[in-house]
Length: 253
Ligand SMILES: [Zn+2]
Image 1 (cartoon, rainbow, N blue to C red):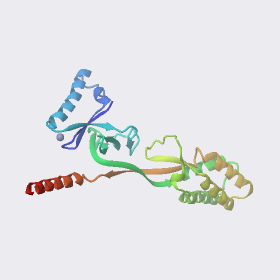
Image 2: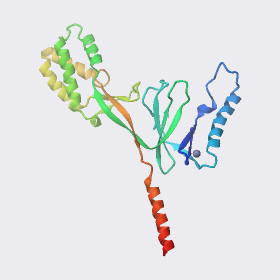
Image 3: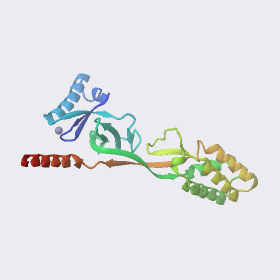
């Protein structure tokens, strides 16, 4: 179990992870697992030493709150997760600046949310698929271009809130795929009639049905992690002032 300890005085944190107990095996060094373990223990002892006499509290990590701006395997990236001390919520920013540096954990009072910054079609993939499936009677270039620009127009009228997310995990944590909804589908098919005639329209209609739920017609939404930092609580300071004022008044009385 991960254990997160916060020094209330300094607003610094220390994360004890299961990995601390099993540090990566270092083939160059001949240290035994025991000596590794004591090194990790020393890390926390150092934290305790630096914060001697300060108020420490255990924080609870919010399950499933972990989000990263890059894929899991990327060594240099910023990740966030949430934690609480039961009264206040916090965001923990986890990062390293260089590959050979240890991870840094920064405590931020506040919260984070994901903001959708764009939704787009996959033009290259669509064109490739159309070429592959229409090999016998290739689409003229102008029809291909018209179809792609029509689909781009369709996406502009869609609201991401009305789209269904595709459960497959995207390799990039901030790129999420969505299915075209019925409104978008109707608009796309209706306008395809202006581009494609006869048999070709029917082929395109089938193509759309084949690829809208899982395939090249999926829509790619890009998200950004936005951290909303809570201003340091002035309430406490004000209430402290008020109470000292009251105290004075009481003394005067
Ligand atoms: Zn401290």
